[in-house]
Length: 85
Image (cartoon, rainbow, N blue to C red; front, side):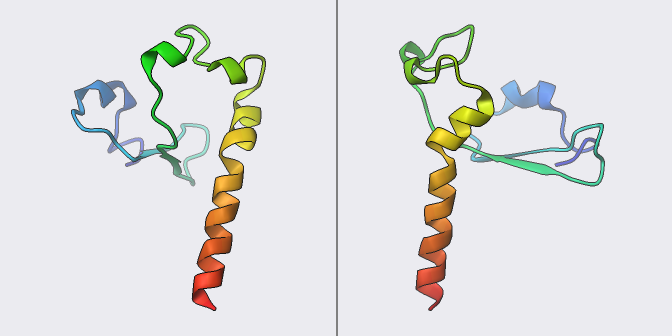
């Protein structure tokens, strides 16, 4: 899904949970960015204004990603390398 094929304003039209979303930002037309679902959060567990959970308050988006999700990608790569050997 690129700029021409996907309009993020229409995301509320989807009925099923999407596990991957693709965006092509206007300022960089040569790359498409893939975003993966990493967590489902109960409505009561997140601040509606900041979109942060209690343990994320005061952190940047990058800091949250590094704290919670970066290691999972690392473990995935290690797992795949062990299986290939």
